[in-house]
Amino acid sequence: MLKSQLEGQSALVEAFLDRLSLGRIVHAYMIVGPEGSGKRTLAAYLSKAVLCEGKHPPCGQCRGCRLTLSDNHPDALTYGPEGRSLGVATVRKIIEDLSVRAYYGRRTVVIEDGEKMTTQAQNALLKILEEPPEGTVFFLLVRDANRMLPTIRSRCQLLRMGLLTPGQAATVLEGKGISREMAAEAAEFAGGVVGQALRMAKDKGFIERMEKAKRIMAGLQGGMDPFGLAELMGEKKDMGPMLDALMVLSHRDMAEGSSRARDWLAALLKARRGLDQNLGTQMVAETLFLEMSEDTKWQS
Ligand SMILES: [Zn+2]
Image (cartoon, rainbow, N blue to C red; front, side, top):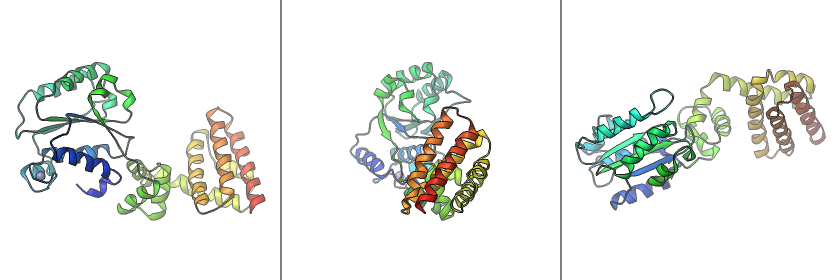
């Protein structure tokens, strides 16, 4: 596994490896972070370290590391929801699988989409977290720790995914072959969550939206009629994402020192509130571009 995929998590990883070398890891971790923040990648790395039999885990050389790398480690168990929720049947399967001895000593259990566990499933899991089998380490991956029962939370040590700045996330994206401009836009849009940014950078809808937003901004600066600009915003369902796209561009202008970009952002935020309050789409768009045109006129 590439270290670069763990960008932004180095403090967390190092602390874990320190504890591991001292023999002081706990038996249950809850890895918390939004979708696309790299929870699976982190869990896979930590699991590999736990199962490593070398001196400096994960060494990449030992039997454990080789088995993990080829996805064949019999003591690396992964579970997730079947369909919409993770029910008690899956937890029973976990308990059954753990009733058999581990092959090589330690064992790791990764549970993906933990927030999809039903209350019944969480209660069943609680029993095994209270009396975990020897040498077993649980990694529970959840988007929002508040969706888990307090009793589960209290049994786990929390590992909160470190978020990247949009700049750092953009660098990761560029490393994956995304153009510099698209990487910057998608990373800004996704607030630094690499997985989300990557998905956007490859999404045709997102790319088209950004291009349209750029045409609107160019029209605005070229003195185009506010009502004409409002028409370009499209239907109601497109409005929210279009406002976000315009915000990304305004943020960039602001970072580059544009004084009117701050006023644009204020107008965009107001439009977003209007949309949230169910004001008419056309009125929101027209008010927005009247305001943005004013700001452009006075300050250019
Ligand atoms: Zn190893």
